[in-house]
Length: 96
Image (cartoon, rainbow, N blue to C red; front, side):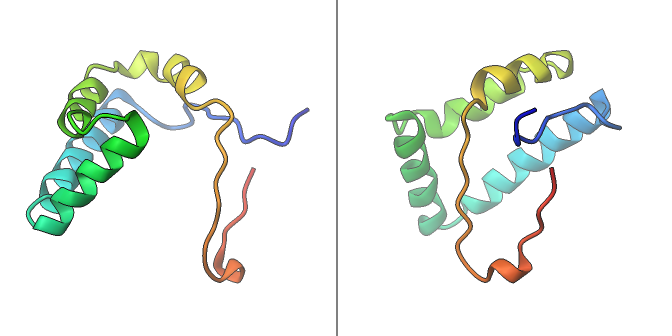
């Protein structure tokens, strides 16, 4: 068995997905209230997608994902992810 963390539905529900999307969108809008936040959003879109136009489009595309499609979307787009932790690793929570 690999040492990769598996994604499961757990206790998530369609309501949870809807609330996640609403809060994520609100957070994005609040972050863009400043010039710094707008610049960060454009930079993130350019780094992740190679296109600053995706700064707005990716949220619309995320909203198109149905709750029942989450496992397939995760398998398709979250493959071979690697994370780096910068800071005091004593505070890092490890779980598999």
